[in-house]
Amino acid sequence: MTQEPIPYPLAPAPTIYHPSPDYTRLRETCPVAPIALPDGGKAYLATRHADVRRVFTDQRFSRAAAAGPDRPTRELGSLAEDSLIGMDPPRHTTMRRAVSHAFTVRRVEALRPTVAALVDRMIDDLVAAGPPADLIPHLSAPLPIYVISKLFGIAEQDQDRVREWSDALVGDWDADPAAPQAALDAFGEMIVARRREPGDDLMSALIKAWDEHDDLTERELVSVTAGIFVGGHETTTNQLNLFLLVLARHPEQLAGLRGDDPVAVARAVEELSRFIQLGDNGVLLPRVTTEEVELGGVCLPAGTPVLPAIASANRDASVFAGADTLDLTRADNPHLAFGAGPHHCLGAALARMELQEALGALLRRLPGLRLAVPEEELRFKPGLVVRSLEALPVTWDRVER
Image 1 (tube, helix red, strand yellow):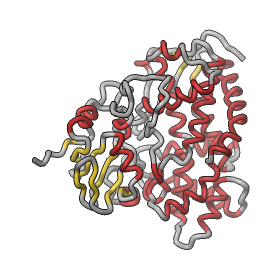
Image 2 (cartoon, rainbow, N blue to C red):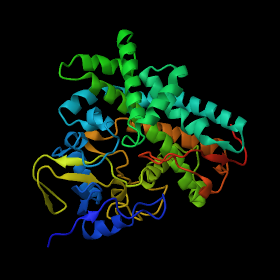
Image 3 (tube, rainbow, N blue to C red):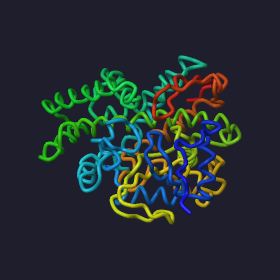
C-alpha cells in the first residue's frame, strides 16, 4: 500500500536541543518517507544515518539539480545555484581542488598557534568587559571572521563590513532579496579589485583558477567566493554559541571537562557537533536523483527530490548508543554534522580547530563559566536558516592565565 505524503516541515521540536519527534517514528517505521512540501511539491525524506550518508556520497543524488531555480526548497536562496554547494562532479571536483589546499589538516594545524593566541587576547577583552559580558562580540563572532578573512586576504579594518555582507546572505532571500543581492554585488566588486592586485591568499587563488577555465562565469566565481566565506564563519560562530547553551544544561558533564586536556576537548567538540540543532528543520542541502535509485527499500524514479535529515541521522540509535543523550566522552562518533562525500564541509578541519581552541581556552581560563541570564531571556535572530543568538551573556567565578 502506498503511503500518503507527510506534511513537511514536520511537527516542531519541543526544544531547540532536539529534532522533531516525528524523526524517531519515521526512522522506525518509514525511514525514507514521502513528504508534501509547502508549495504543493512532493519529495522524500531520508531519516536513518545509513540512508542520509548514502544521499551525500552517491553521485546519483545531484546537488546541481537541487540548487537551480526549480529547487525543491529555498535554502540559501540563489547563493546555492552557482556556489560549490550547488555543483556536481566533475565541475565541483575541479573547483574544490583549486581551493582545498587552504583547508588541509596540515595547513590548519599550522594556524593553530595563531588561533590560540588570538583566542587568549579575545578572552582578555571578555574579562575586561565583565563579568557579565556578551560572548558573541568578544569571541564567537570575531574569531571565525578573523580566521577566514586572514585566509581570504581581507584587511582587518574591512572585516566588519564583509561580515555584514555575509549576514545578509544567510537571511531570507524571499522576504528581502535586495539585501543579499547587494551583498553578492559587493563581493563581486572585491573580486574585481583583487583581480587587479592579486596576493598570496585564497581569493586570489580562486580568481586564478577561475580565469583558467573558459566555461566558468563571473557570477559563479562570486557565488563560490561568497559561499566559502559564509561557510567559513557563520556556522562556527553559531556552533560555539549553541555548544555553551547545551553545556549549561549539562553542568555535571561540563564540570568533568578539562580545558587543558586536548583529547577530551576534541571529543567534546565532536559530540556537541552531533548533538546541537543548528536549524529548525534539520535538513542539509536537498538532492535530486539523476536516475532510478533504491534508497532504504524505496524505489525513487529519476528526478525525485530527496531531503537528507542530518538532525535525524545524528540521533539514529542504531549508530549512536544513547543517541538522544549528550555524552562528551563518546569515542566512536561518525556524526554527519559536516556532511559526507564530495560535499563534505570544505572547512571542517578549520572549524574543528577553532572550536577546540575556543572551547578549551574558555574552560581553562574561566572556571565556572555559565550563562549570566536565564535561558528563556535569550533571543534568536529571526529569518535565518541557522539559529543565531542576538546576545550570549556569560559569567564566571575567577580568571586563570
